[in-house]
Length: 120
Figure (tube, rainbow, N blue to C red):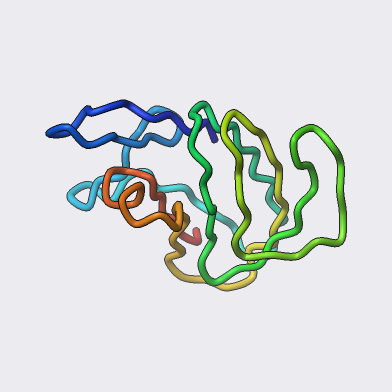
């Protein structure tokens, strides 16, 4: 997922997009489908200078790469993604139901930095 900040895009507030799309409560997008029991790798690229505490509800994930360096055995549900940094996490889709992914900074969430995962 590529994270982009659009400066002052909404009445002077920054707008945040994941893969080019800001979350919308009206359309409930961005929406990604998971299959129960499968292991997923999420790759994040922060194309902004902001630090983001990334949070995946209802699941834990393993950090597999941070700033280009491989890692293993570090289990989290929130991880800090630095400005212009990349990281990768693995998780198992083992808790069916709608799952929220977002930046833990409320203003970022309010202006698009969210996505939903649903189970097929």
